[in-house]
Length: 301
Image (cartoon, rainbow, N blue to C red):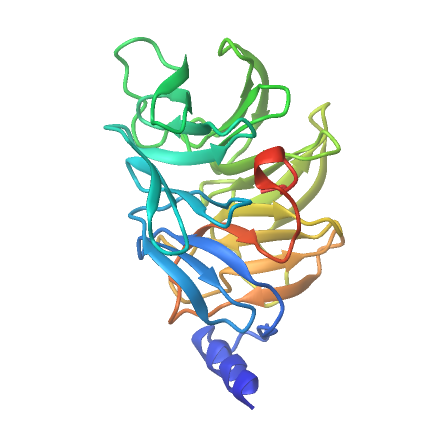
């Protein structure tokens, strides 16, 4: 009865959208950009853990159980007992972070236009400048970014509406057009690239392209009956081939759709999460019932 009541409440919050939340499905960590918090949410929908994280846009659960996340102008690693064990601060806006296998942290500085490797002490050990000296990229220059297994960098250039891959010297080796503004991008194990786009013209979609640039999979607003899509942000490709996407509800859409949606390759929604009393806008998500070491590329997120 408790789960049924929760489903009814969520359906009411969605204006009667016939997309019930299946309680007990996934345990996950997420970044709520609007509330400025990082969360761990249990499979029954209850909060296990939360921590202040202003403008949090990217988040990871590390093998040691700690959470690594962005904080507007910084990156923190925090233990489950609330101890800060890594803290990088910058004048630049920051929307991307990633713990590397060697223990360093990759950080994408948006307005500064820098890709950084930072050691555990906070020292910058590698810097790639994507902008001319003295130029500020502004708020729209970069969203999520990832360091790849080949030591290249995959960067979602939101304002330019393109995903670029850079080599170790900062040279562009590939461009993927991404209308609507790319927010997140990941390189899959099969060599394809998965991209989530914002709400600009031609956007509000998640699409997958092969190494030749051909779109081999796409999901956009209107493809999921009863589930409107507004601004696609976080991504995770699951071992079974399904994709979990976060449906960011800012820009006037708070409470109007599920936050999280698991979609099959044939575009069927098999799980949603839509508790709008708990969460406002999810910008990044990582499922915790998927095994793998996030620092070794075993979590496609």
